[in-house]
Figure 1 (cartoon, rainbow, N blue to C red):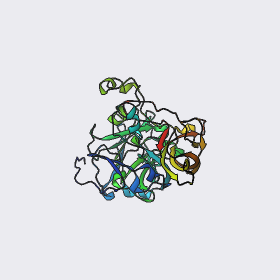
Figure 2 (tube, rainbow, N blue to C red; figure 1 turned 120 degrees about the horizontal axis):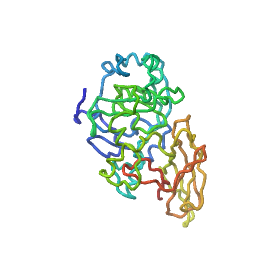
Figure 3 (cartoon, helix red, strand yellow; figure 1 turned 120 degrees about the vertical axis):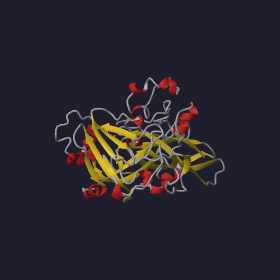
Figure 4 (tube, rainbow, N blue to C red; figure 1 turned 60 degrees about the vertical axis):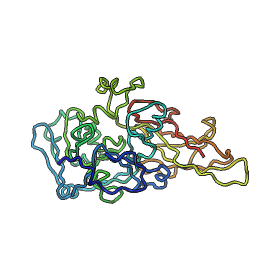
Length: 372
């Protein structure tokens, strides 16, 4: 059921900043994002490697395969009849803030600003429960170490389908809340965001949250797809061309979690009677790193290039997998200047001042800044 037609795509929100049209890629301004604890549909970024098509639920099926056994096929109606699970989790593109990394040295990929992130409530079926229902893991499949997801719904830029995979342990651990989601923020999942069915992998980068998922393969190896094997990997900084990268892709691991990060989303100067100084109201978001490091525990801002720091107030954090919203008022600052932010996590980790450069422009997490 593949297609390559950009003429019939859904209507998009006018609030998004378009970064590409074929395929459609767009993000909201970060200042708009931080006004909502849970990101409304109109502000959820669109990241595509292909056209977007709307599929009716009544004709949509998911197929699970394992070795030479007969495939297990389930309809959307049957999926919806299973117990529904929900999780609040932040979805973030590996290329968030790529534009900043590209200012250091050219990178390969969409020049994203800092809006390719969305915090939503996801509803659907636990993957671990669906795998139990398929009985593949019960009936002797010791060779299985990875769960591979695929969407054959549309042709991609770099492969015949979009694919990704996660370790089996991640997939079958109930506490990790890996879902096959059909709802976002208690509404039916829209086509732009993977409807009628997408993968949700809390704690992992968005490239593993396969949209329009129609096939799952239980395998002894990672997905062989381009987007798992030759994209979304961090190569050494000396690799600065696609030609130099070509023999190295297989030597570096596929990305899972993204690093601890935070962003200054908006700075508003507060009028003051003092003509020499002012106050600023700063708002932003922070993102946890590897799950083993725990949640974001603090965010600090500096108006003197890191010489001194002021603690921000954490205004929102929901569960293990959400983003963190924060804000702070800093008094007695110059009429113009630059404010920086950095995050800390429960393990004691601190956000790096500089983000490490890599060819694909992924996982940038240097201090964020904004001027007033």
